[in-house]
Length: 185
Image 1 (cartoon, rainbow, N blue to C red):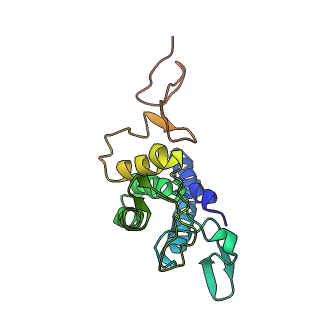
Image 2: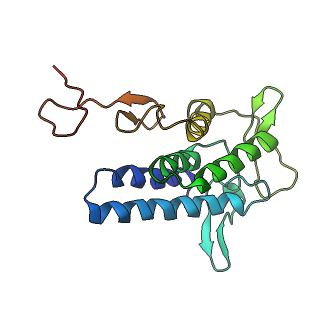
Image 3: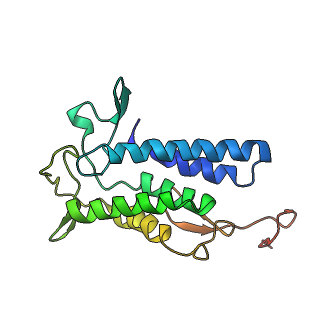
């Protein structure tokens, strides 16, 4: 499973909102299971940061097997899922998991000029890749900020986030039956 795939937990939680009752619980549970799997990929590393890809192979679950999968480049997808799961469940474990990730990022990725990705999350002496990806500021830190913010900040019934974490206002058509419509004329 790739780190990029970890966004799916949040996507399913978002899809649960507004789904018929029998499906909503199923989607939310599936989102929670993906969030847990992605958290395990972080928790099973020395640095508590997830690898780029991980496998389920015998006794080694949610761990990278190949050297070219062991890097961490400050991706946002796991934090994004924690945020969506927090917003829809208010289960404190999602904030706890986010805080663990924030502490690990600060401890292992902070460098004099900002933050850097890591070449091997299983090594007790991290080696930097000397790159601060643009999505780290635009997405990873934004989702961490939102995870610890009030639900009144960018409420999900009025805002939707695109794939780059830019909030866009929800605009409903005049014939929509949803409450709180913002009518386009």
